[in-house]
Image (cartoon, rainbow over all chains, first blue to last red; front, side, top):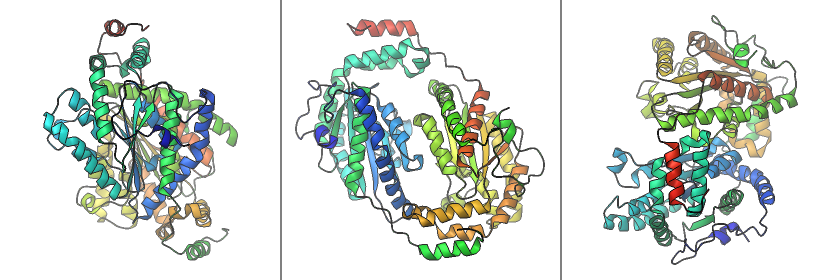
Length: 284
Length: 284
C-alpha cells in the first residue's frame, strides 16, 4: 500500500485536532533507522524520473511539470523537506519558491497574481514553501480580506488548480501537521542555541495565540479544496525521519503516475555520431 | 597553499591553448579517492558559513552576498558543479540561474539588463551558469554585435562588477577549462547513451568548428576583466573529481574571506524564552 493512499485526505470534513501527529502511516515499523535507509533507497529512482521529466521539457512541445505545495505551521519542518528534495534531484530541474508576507505591489493584485508569476516551467519540479493557501489561512485568521472575498478564494483556488492540471501540471499538495506542544519544543530549541537565534522572531509567539483559529482555517481549506484533480495529503510531522520519508514517497509515487519515458531525439543519432567522428580524428 | 592562489589568473596575457587541462594544481597527489574524501570533509564548514551569510540576510541591514560566475565550453562540467554546490548547502540560500540564448526582449536592452534582474538577494549565494561573459564570448565569435560594442563591454563589465563589490557582493569568477579532444569524448558518450540523447544538440557540433575562436575570445575576456576586486580563476577541468574539488575549495576559501559571525538578535532572548515558557505549561 502506498503513501498516497495512506495519507490522502478523505472527502468531507477534516479533523486536524483529533489527528495523531506522532503516527507513521504507510510505515508499519516505528523504526527510525529503517526509515532513513528507505529514504536512501528511493533516491536513484527519484533522480531518474526527474531527469526524464526535465529532458522532455528541454526537448520542447511537452508541457508536463510538477508542482509540490507545502503548507504547515511554523517549525513543522517544511525547510528540511525542501532541502531533502534538493539533495535527491538535479538543481537545474528544481524550482523552489517561498512565499512570505505579500508586498504592496502583490497586495494590489488578485491573490493568485504572485503565484502565477512563480509557476515552474515545462519539465520542472516546482516546490512552493507556503503558497496561495496562505490567503485562506492567515488571511482568514487575521481577517486580512473581507469575509466574502475569503469565501470566493476557495472556488478560485479550485478553478486555478484545475486549469493547471489541464495544462500539464501534476499537483502534490501536502500539509505537514505537528502539534502545538511540538512547536513549543522547537521554538525553545531555537532560543537556547545562539546559532539558531536568527530563525526566531517574536511574532512567532504572537501567532501561537491563534493556533486553534489556524487549525480551523486549515480544516476548512483542506475540505473545500480537496478535489479529485488536486487532492490534499496530510503528513504527521512530529517525527522528522517519518515526515521526510513520507513526503519523498509521496513525490516518488506522484512522479510514477506521470509515466515518464525518455524523449525521442529530434535529430538523427547515427548521422551525428558519424559527423563527430569525422571531425575528431583519434576518437572512438 | 590555497586553491585561490594556485588557480588565480595572473595579470597580463592569458594562454589557454598551452594550458594543461589535466593538471591538478593545489592538490599534490594525483589521487581521485583522496580528492573525493577531501570534498566530503569541507561540507560542514561550507554549510556553516552559508548559513551565517543567510542569517545576516534574514536579519536585514546587511547587504553581503556572494556571486559565483561559472563559464566554460559545452560539456566542461558546469552542471555537475552546480549540483555539487547544491548538495553542500541549504537550497533556501542558493540562487541558481542559467543564461541561455537571449530572448527578443532581452536583446532589446543593454546586455547587462537580464543579468541585473537575476542577481541574488542579500544573504544569498548566487550561482550563474553562464553569465554576462557570453556577450563577449559567443558575441565576439559570431559577431552578434558591432566590434565597437563588443569593445565597450569589457569596460562595462569591469564597472558593473566593481559596483557589485562596492554594494556588498563577493565575486568568484571561474572558468572550467577542458580540451577540444575531451569535449569530443563527452559528446560521443552522449550520443552512445539513449538516456543522454536529450543533452545533445546538433548545434553543439557546429560550435566545435569555432573552438579556436572561442579560446581566443576567452583569452581576451580573461585578460581584460581580471581585476583586483573580481579576479578570474581557471580550473583545469579534464578530471571530474579535481574540478569539483577545486571549485568547492575556491568557494569555501572565498566564504572564509568574508569573516562571517552569527548576527546579533534584535530581540531579547531571555524575555522571549520566559514568554514561551509561561504560555506553554509543561515545557522545559
